Image (cartoon, rainbow, N blue to C red; front, side, top):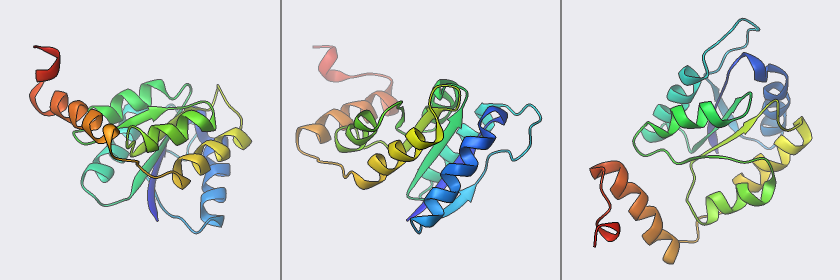
Length: 154
């Protein structure tokens, strides 16, 4: 598996632990975030990871900022990205199983490194279930592609 990982300046320590954990799992990483304590805009990492995911250059992405919210908003602006902020493993697992998320996000100021590893593991180990969930993901993509949702306008 090949993942992109990105972060802002607030997430250096937790990113280092997540990177070590993922490498121990045999994951190839493309690090697009900062490795400096100088202020770094989370939108840059969110966009970079989102672009790599959308272009099919990686299998998914991991994004970390202070809360996970801002960086997920940036990633979700890239067509084809379904980035989810999760603070525990259950939501991370279901984000993949039900929403086919391709980017997982969390906050360095919200969770600790051990929880981050559990979140990443739950997300990586889950598989999209399809079925009724595929219809719903299709609706999300319809909104993205057309700025409309026919089912909601009936």
